[in-house]
Length: 172
Image (tube, rainbow, N blue to C red; front, side):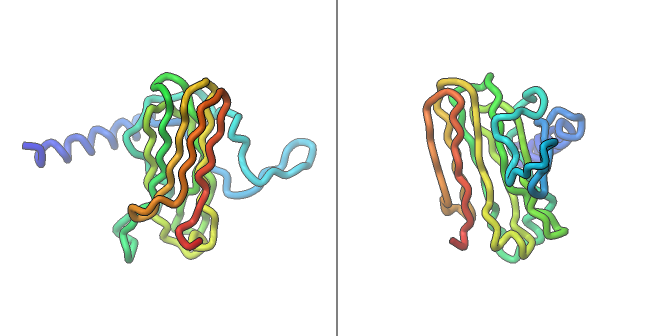
């Protein structure tokens, strides 16, 4: 019975994502320049990118898939928040076929946000895999980054406007 329901559940998730019910996402493939001419190395984690959207079970970081990997070990970005109403802004590294590893900005609600990625390009081997999360309430926020079931980095804070940083790379 469960085996018959699984394809229906996946189809429902895909349809919701295609219908625009996913979180607001923007990408940045490098430093950005402000109106004053100053450059910043990463997006501002305190700036939101639109209204919070419905939470998703799992998002995909980039366009690489498990089927393309020699060793099919995903990178898993996980953020835990203290509630399911307050938006959290997440920045994470995506892995693309063209060799780019843009930093993606996602604003959504918890309490648990999972993002899967597959490091399918050579550039990702040397890069820091960014995972930061920020929220504005006096509740606990935690991030965990793992690769192939091995935890690379974790951080927890309990304070208003806290930012947790789980940036890492399995080769370091």
